[in-house]
Length: 530
Image (tube, rainbow, N blue to C red; front, side, top):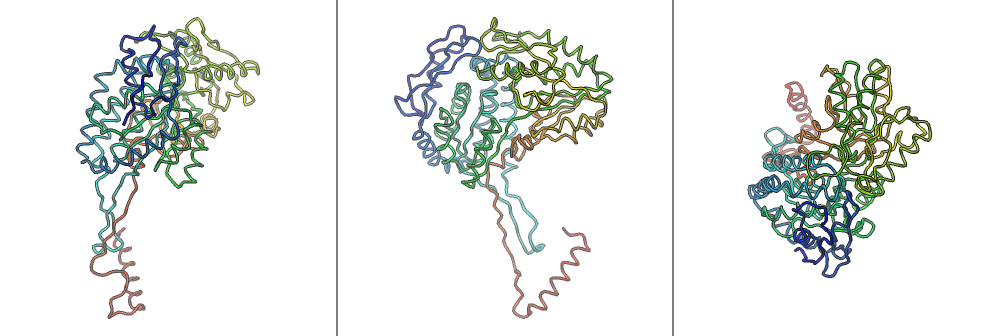
């Protein structure tokens, strides 16, 4: 059950009217933590002012969360799928009805623009609807071919893992918090989740709404704290791990999950490429390049950081791209008037500044941006375009995770594909061409879990019936599609052998039996039976 704490906002100056002390107090009360727990403070990126205080969960609190989760998980798994669906569809409706509150919270604690926050609202509505409409089909017992035609009745079943641990990041606080939890819940699991503290309010808002939709107490719980403090008990109690974050952290968690022999799905870093083919519509592609490079101030796992443009259109494309980038409106506003918002943390601003300064110092050409904007707020940074980036520069192959993109020339398409595949990452990519078949053919050659043709990332991400995830250093496992729900289950095969089994009848010896089976197998081969 949730513990009521008196931790709430100490300042609401400059925040939308929907973010009241009463709301923040209610959300803080959703954290699983003991009475009198120490408080942690998060700040508003737009202003640097304190936003809220949240109780901090201890390792003992995490253990308590898992105990409670295990107590209720069996009952939740036994709840008819129709009832689980009803709760998730009600959650879908509430998210859309209360979206202004969610948008305000996401902007306040993440610093993104309202248009970027709105994409998270639509994403969660789509995810809830898709899995609610698909869960019966995905979990239904499935007949499989048996060992002997007609004689072996084989069925595939799926059982929930038990209690799933979800560790979600700060950059997309609603999509990553609720999006990975929805299929886990529908599959019959309980969830113990650790959202990033900086954006925990949005995750807590989703939990609050899910309870209003009818989710039983303790089926989904949130703990708050640093990974180094509560990460070990979080993993120790889990039957499965879903993690979104850095490749370095993902490797460490994968090792720990391996030691416990539990499954894990990890969406990690990326250095995503975009290839512009010679026949691309330049105006459309420039618009796409803006959308690919600067959403959420570049703090998006699937955004583009490398762009490959052919010699024959390079000058025209770059000229238009730079001009459009310089026209982007940067700032803080709780409406749809802004194109690029703030970075979220001081450490991210430091990373972006360091990467750009290193590149320029080593000879990169700054075509646009490259400057912090403290006049707008403490964490703003101009959308930045670099050319002449070379391998000795940090951002050549390392993820920046900010509003920074590097442009490279190419002559042959094979060279562009080779360069696009030259990093250890493989999360997302984008290809632009007037010829859809040509674009898809190039896309199939890219080493990435998702590749979009004539779109930045939304086409593949929004195709929720298809799997999404990384190759190489970009992770393991998939979200979305059937995989996005079935990974939270244990597959079981039940095979019923009827009449004759694998041993010969008493009247037939093994030599005769082996010849009979050999003849049967050859007959099956000739008749086309699988």
